[in-house]
Length: 143
Ligand SMILES: [Fe+2]
Ligand SMILES: [Fe+2]
Image (cartoon, rainbow, N blue to C red; front, side):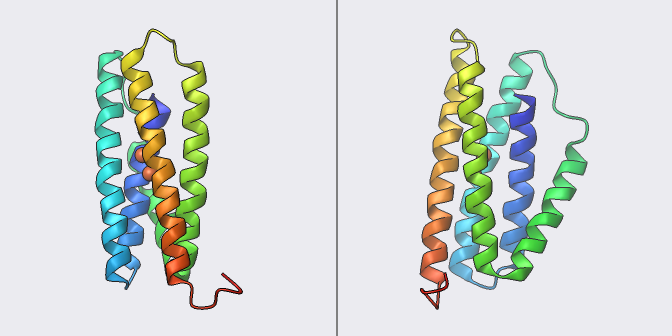
């Protein structure tokens, strides 16, 4: 669950960085909406850490800074690259969460519920970014 919490710290940083850079107001709103949902994930994973008697990673400030820098770099290339980065990141997070579901104890229903809900959200984030990338594509043959 600590790894999941780190992932949500990074998700905050990525979405905020990308929303800061884009000049497209519709895309900015969409990125900030996803960031708000990632904030829910952050709270859920923190609650589970507390309930399980664990603690967040002490390196979270570093993870946040690194992810923010990566988000800025991707967004500065173009909105298309930024959205492609979102799609790939969210897909990898979803795969990680699927694997975590496979290893979580069956009896830990609260954790299973959190991970399953987050996985649904991450897949939706990937689908939304893919759709936004297609909408923003001015040259369909190369997008
Ligand atoms: Fe998330
Ligand atoms: Fe997400």
